Length: 374
Image (cartoon, rainbow, N blue to C red; front, side, top):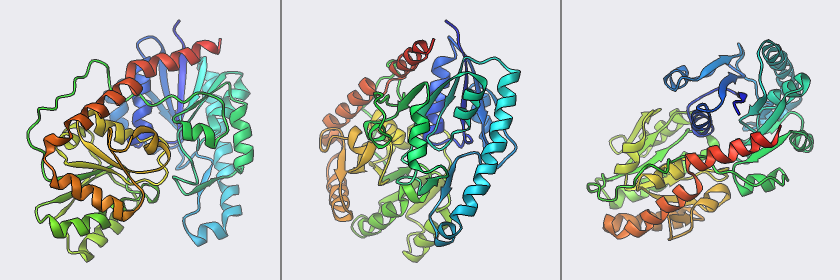
């Protein structure tokens, strides 16, 4: 049965959660009417247009219910910042309520733990609401909800359906719902292990932000660079730490060894050709880029915590590390080995991804949740 679904998120920046949202919308639009509403004006319109997704956005810079607490200044003025963010949320909620009353939707699907406007608007308009929990908030984004966590968890419990993206996220919010891993790879895709010899670079792919810890990748690479004079480090992504990282590169005198590609729309070739993919985030809720690397035959080395440790089984479909010394030793072992010696690990990684993160299974699980809302 065709349903009219409004997906809501705080912008559409083209990284993890947004790409997973795009995959979800694309998989559902053949049998449902799909529309996207951004709570702010920070959207990559080309991605939505290229995928034929109808979209609307609010004329504001931020529609989330969280406040960054990275600095002493922000912590000092947290009460004032919370009031400002509450006013922004009220404004966006009113806009969304007006939008819902002018259009007919069966379901409002909030695509983030950091937004609640979709919840409030759906409740006001008497529409079913689905809350997709994708973030740990203060652990991975160094931010704090204006309601406080106790109240936020209570609001989440009032939603008509909740979708945690990993077991860790489900436990964090105390929800009983089974996790649904993101749809990343289609069952029709075939892994090709008979690729040319890997290019001599380590890949970091994702946003350059504090929670992702890209500086860890750079610091360990600076030590490896002394042993491997032809090795390079490639950053594919943008973010608030970009200038800081470039300053570090200059101080370490690695200008010719570290590449900043900016935002890369198509990453398949980067994964296929890299010797190693690094997931350095301390609290990755899931790790879409981790699965993308696994699908494309790239060895993943990830920090042993949160969603990464759910995906990666150490020495079976990737490698896990607990500190910088372990990370250095693992990378040194991989770089010293023949690429073909990791073929079994690559096969295991691909098999895990196709069995747990297929687009088809993702769509079926989401539609089953929608059907239960009748």
